[in-house]
Length: 440
Image (cartoon, rainbow, N blue to C red; front, side, top):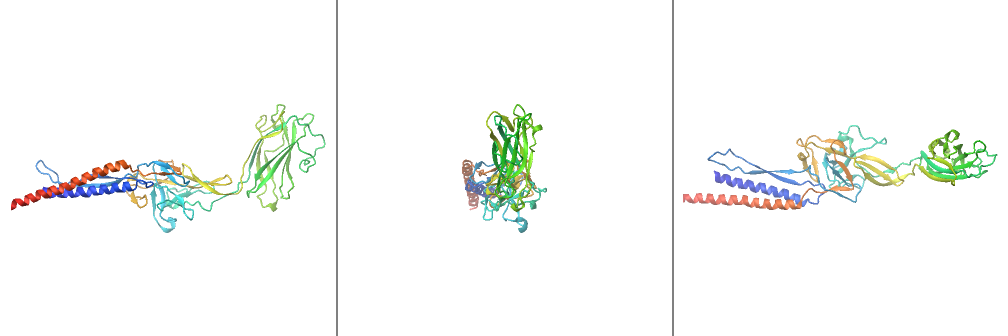
């Protein structure tokens, strides 16, 4: 009985070492597979009955392949903006169907982040799986029920257009020369606009309306102070509000200064906001309100009056023309931001990360994907960097966790162990043959 058991033990050894070699061959062949997790063969004994002081029955060995799914691979850079890697725990949520919610296809999980847009603009990795994400609404919010897979949608970056951004604020710093001769009496409001009086200092700025069209707003300054108020300037703000090519006055006001050249808001009537009454024929959202920032009372952080020449020191005007889609960027929080050629950007998706209590319990699928199992536990959809989820690195991929040197070492050991198991069978066979010859 012991000789027969020894032969069967040798057979189990051959089977176990064969399976170990299979894991090694898979590992080596997937050395350059993005997101691949190496598999290791774990051996355990097979016992047929308990041994005693005088007897022993061979049992054999069995093997348990264990994929080290929770092992982090090396993150390396990529030239594609839509390639992603997860540094830390978690998986991308993907599906083999572009619309799993309507087709009923399963969602699976992967670390293979070689996502690139297909012909329809859907982000799909090299294994053919479509990336799923939370769509960000115009207010910047994602779905409230973040544990529901049905709240996800395929990430699509085609057909994106940037909105025009109307100008809503103008911030100015300028010096008006204290050496400027005061304009004589007889100035009437609007004289600079209609060309009757030549302004002492003029500066124009480009602004944008609600349709993204550019317009010019001009500030005309004339030193009109005299007597007890020598440090006062009249400013007329103009623009072509009806599209006829002629300037229309938006407002006429006074800008006053203290004796030290700082802004005197008590003597200043220029408001901190202006309203541009675009003509209805221009098809623009009218009126257009613009905040005007030109300094603080008693400080020289905006308009000033000094002995230097009149000059514009700095200006900051927001707004942008209508923009065409240019590129995408993905930040560490998984927010996919579309960038447009007018300099604006828009958050369109947030990429969730699925985490498991025991990721090594997941079931492997084709294409470096994994399916949930009771051993892995229930998945949790998290925002990147929150609740134990890793961060997302854009323009990068996660390399295979396979170490070639380690695999070749294991291959040699496995080969020797396989040969030794075979030797058990041949030796036990010779012993049985000797036993049979005794009968002769």
